[in-house]
Image (cartoon, rainbow, N blue to C red; front, side):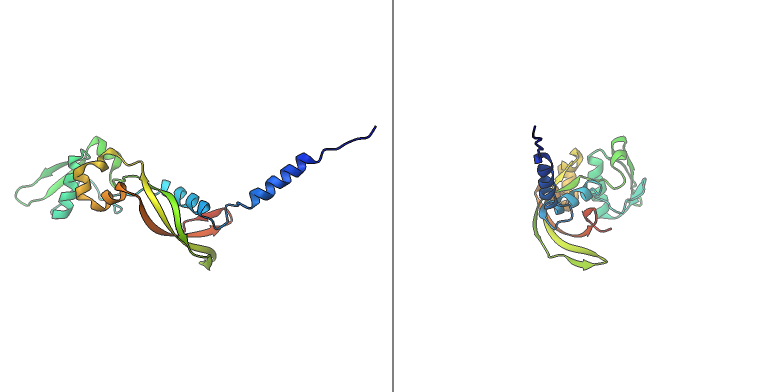
Length: 180
């Protein structure tokens, strides 16, 4: 009797690995750049106050008072106003304590890579500059209030429509990432 071996399973597996290799995580491609940027932004939200103030917080500055009053209107802060010295003292509410002290209002989600430069070695790694389009995700209700949007126009603009920005990405053995 003649023995017949099937070589198809091994050939199919080899072809699949070959095709998968064409789409490696280290390839300079829009899909890989989107993956790297989105991984970064999930852990790095956009915040109203990157330099987090300590609460209780006191101010006499008119612009800062306007911003803090907007957060008070959104029920994130309680305010006590001094009449003699015109000092406003802010403390967090129970709801505000969850968002304080930076008051983050969501994170970027990259929707497309608009352009990127050819890779060039910088700081010991191949790097590229990308221009990307994004939208804001996980925006809390308080960030959508008219008072907060009026007091923080940059935030209002960021959550209203898709935006564009630039980033540097570095190629590592594990794929592309945003250098620290």
